[in-house]
Length: 107
Image 1: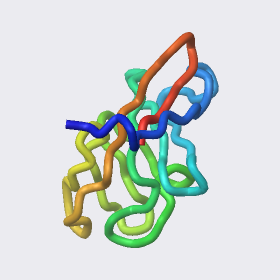
Image 2: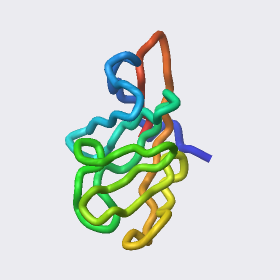
Image 3: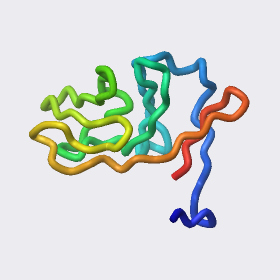
């Protein structure tokens, strides 16, 4: 159960600001917002869990997977779980809300 008193809802962008297959970094580099190829939004930790590398500015989306180009670690966009080596630790994930064509990340 989420503790709603400590949750922060942050405006990330307008829906049309992020095209499918694109990502961006938020919150001073702590959170990455991703728009999957099917248009669904996801939010994860920005830094790859294998090596400190920005997934919001450098990551690549392939289907429902997020790829870190540094060492080709792959993560499931929805769960943050690593899908191959060298990554073995899941990315933190955050709830995304769409309200009046605005995208919010709840962290």
